[in-house]
Length: 186
Image 1 (tube, rainbow, N blue to C red):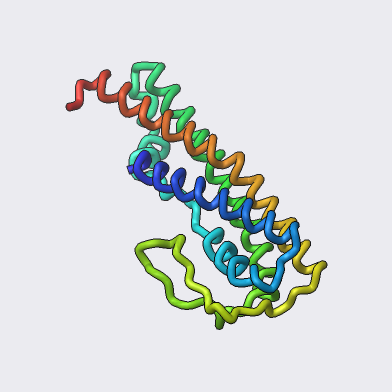
Image 2: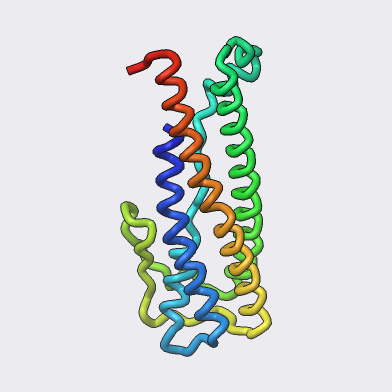
């Protein structure tokens, strides 16, 4: 379950990172009237949820019952602990990402008017439909700089997040192989 969830977030994070860079570039280069719809679209497309829903039933049982000490193979026990540490790191990075997302959204609600967002396709979270007559609610340059600074910080957090996700998937895959080999699972 974890490897599937991690891969889903890796895929979304890669696209979100590119959308975030595009938003920052657009704002830094000055938004022309003809680019307002693009700005709305990129803003919406870069607001993806990037939380991995880690399966923690088994790990909670191992931790709370003290059963981890029953695993005699030190390589497996160490791999489990390392994986748990990586999960903590991912959760901390994601917390920072969401924190800056909230700060960026506080500014974004002053810039964007929700009436220009139209219903998109629920099956494609990156398909954001914008009214072609969209206007910014506020195009104050200072406000746009604050928005862009927070968006850039969020993008920088994504740069740290993606390798951690890839590492966690590799650790989970290796752990599955170790356990399967040790206990002869098929």
